[in-house]
Length: 307
Image 1 (cartoon, helix red, strand yellow):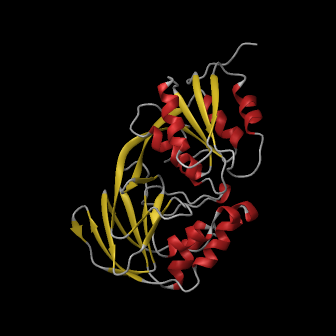
Image 2 (tube, helix red, strand yellow; image 1 turned 45 degrees about the horizontal axis):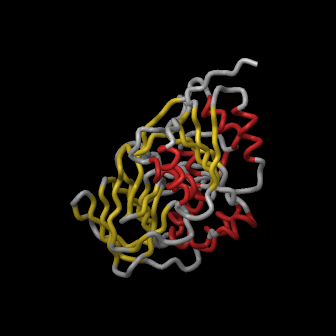
Image 3 (cartoon, helix red, strand yellow; image 1 turned 90 degrees about the vertical axis):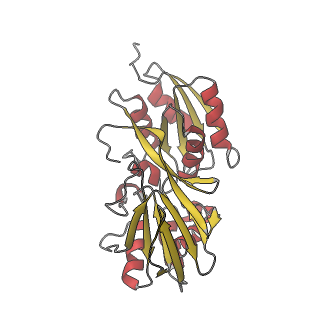
């Protein structure tokens, strides 16, 4: 049998075996790759930060593509090992919401996403990442109600309820949301102080949820070299708007105070925990500085993708 030509010949696939629901990962990848002239290897994560280490080791071995299978946390971990290099990364969705796959315009199934890697029309795009202190994010960080939401949607809930865990977490976060007075300095310019139940600093637009995925805002672009800052005030309509976006409930409009910048300094009258990319543990707290790292990651997409 004549093998089909693929752009990437030496592929490293980094897999988080604990991510998402059980599926025959290796069988699926084999069924896709067997018809192409590619050599692919698999490595497994066992603990936090393994993804970055495995990505760097693969680069040293001379691969020309690193693909990551898992949830958004796993994809971020691998991206940390890939950022600043000239080699591309591919996202293989294996989590619950798969917001990063949606951000890249990728299919929500492993088989279809793997076919993107070997598609003859595959393209490489450059995207931004964000940093808070020594921690990184691809999509967004947030405080207040956003932090309560992230803390509520833990691994046990995801395993038990799947995508519905995000809906349940959103309802729990709505219970007596506390307000804080935030002071923002954006690119060196002091903004007006704002009272809000949450602050959201976003690099990416997707909220996850498969076919029902909704964009958070038309202003957000993951490749524009800017972060988008949203303040969520305590009125019911704005709260329902954010929860509606996160849980993919249509018809709940989000109307938030909005700023853009590359360096965001955040302080509050009371210390606020900062959560990143839906993780269960906080990565920082106020006061803190959030900055965009423009164009540091190369990603594989189809030409039709709008990111």
